[in-house]
Amino acid sequence: MRALLAQALDLDTRIVRRARRWLPHQDGSPIRLADYNLTLWRRQQGPRLRSESPQWLPLLAQLWRHLPTEGEPVANLRALLLSHGVSPAMWRLLHREGTGWIRPLRNYYTKESQRSGRAALELVLKAQKFGTRQLVPLWLLQALMNLDGNPNLPRKSYLKNPEDPIDAPMAARLGQWAADRVLSGDEQALQQLHDRCYLLLNWAAAHPRYVTSRALRQVTLTGLWRKAEQWHQQELARARQLKPWRAPFELTALQHDELELVWLGSAADILDEACAMRHCADSYVERCARGSYVLLSVRRKDTGKRLATVGLQWADGRLQLHQMTGFANALVPPPIAAVAQQAVASMKINQPEPIMHKSSKSRTYVHLTAVWGNDDAESTIKVSRRRWQQIQDGEPYCATAWSWYEGTRTRTTWSFGDGELTISQDDGFECYLTIRQLYVNEVTSAARPKK
Image (tube, rainbow, N blue to C red; front, side, top):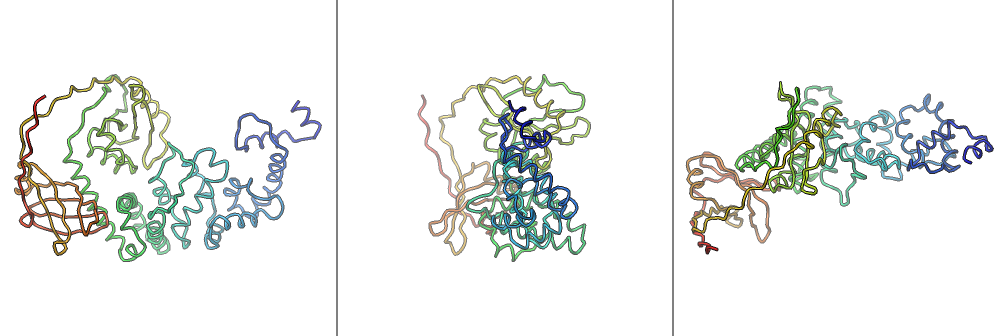
């Protein structure tokens, strides 16, 4: 019947097939006449646009369905973008630089968002946040996208309400630094920014109250890098103090000549993986410690090079594949993905360890209290007597606790080393004390009754 209708209406079968490919839902449903007419119009406009405005073709290909068929396509596209918050300066920048950069980033979005045009509009708005002096480098925009998702687990949307501080002042400051280096032709400085942007964005995500336009205007890239590096080293030191957890499975059944899977069995292992692969594996530390999530690293046997990170979660009493991601959240090549799937299928689940009842004996702890700011702010941690002796001997130790200032609670990090203490807070505040300035109080816990 459809073939007879197409013949009676003298429809071009090539246009019909192309219209079906461009439908939002390719479920075999018949196309509408409006879809046929829109596809025909696109084909008629194509040759002229390719010769006069080729820089707009990648964006037009995503937004045809939102443009009226009357009038000039590029003018209609401009009106559409301006109505969605794109500035005239951004329009002029795209006219000069083109829109081909949106193609590799569309994989961050679901197929539905790609077909509806949401992905293209959001990517233009995301790029605009980095400024309009120069088009943001693709690697920098990709680093920002990696904070919230990756092509292996595409999302419908990345716009936030209310706006994330990283999406506004931090992106603008990074875009300004990148533009300065591009316009000056300083390739070495631009490469340094490329190497450091992952750590800078992670630091900003962990310190949202410090990421303001005013604060970022008063800091240089070198100064911000030092602060981010210090925070990263503190996080690593704290992670190395945590004990590794027990593997809930065995990977002995996996046999491969070139690749191996390494279980990430501690917080330090996961932080090293996240830093080396430039993705957000460190956000899964608490879930891995609880045993509800498992992370594996796919590496080459001969060089130890990391190729992919595999995430597993429990379902029906077994570990099942949740996600796989490559360097900087890139898509994992099919051969490596096949090895990971084979490993998951051949896993042998270990029985949980028997629950051991804690000792009923009383224990003595040491409460350490630090005060600063004219004695208006204070924070307290609890350590064992053995740990306190190690701190007095100059060994490094990190801990987190709450601090209080005029009734306000703030997350605080204690970092010991060589008899000195650094107090740092999420808002960027830091102070330095010696262990002799701490208030020390030994407390003995009550003995538990035996069951």
